[in-house]
Image (tube, rainbow, N blue to C red; front, top):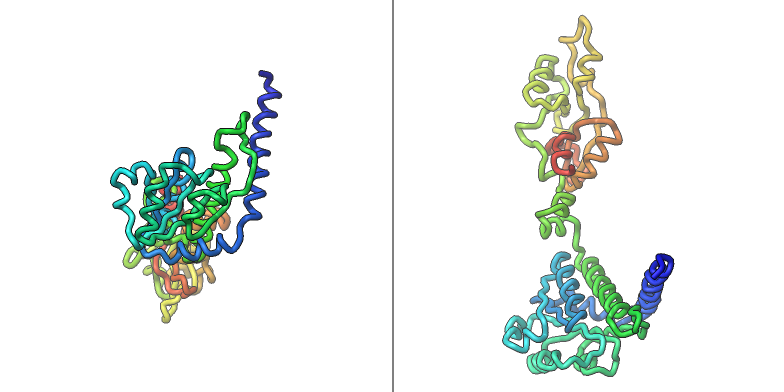
Length: 321
């Protein structure tokens, strides 16, 4: 097979699946709205299941849901027919994926849900299927050609199911007001955990902060800067508000015969760059690089000018790199 033919075939697959996705977008209606609102009210877990390729998609949807604030679990319908129906409680809700909607493996699950009045969201391309008839909320996948060369292997249909699952998860996140800080709690490890680190997680605070009063003497400034080893000293007023910053460069620029008579407020740089405690470490690094500085003082999220801590560029590089 020629390279040009392979490239053409690859593009045809993508174009075919994109057509299905465009059709899917038009099906987002009141049933989708009802599904998201119902999922938001679930007191237990969202059980997601499917047969074959749909099972793989169901597993991914369940994983995304769990990582974005909605407790969820995947279980195959076959396993549920052999004892794992016990994982389902009356507080749960079930999402079932099946392109045909008539898979024999689903029968026991659908009967169980009906018997115990457990709500089902059915996702299928067959509006007349057993699954859709048994569902409390139906999300119908549009009729679209499979991208498979013989038109049989699940390709476009599984892509649409996956995207519909993402749409449910993201809409649910917004309804629950799921924030970056919530996401961070669920992703403490790996590269995602590092990306979600906030400055409050690694800042130096309390007695480790280099801080002096605005009328501090030069001797006090030198001792504080040397002792804390940041090359910076924050200057605060009587209200404990950070009003300026002194760097070792500021000290060198002010050396003359009157040097030891100077006060902190006389040589400080006013209105220093600050960052809120819930800001990401990567954002702190970007601010320091952009402004060519090596330290940032940290304040509370309410824009209070009272310093909570300090972060050095080396602290950021230790986690970001």
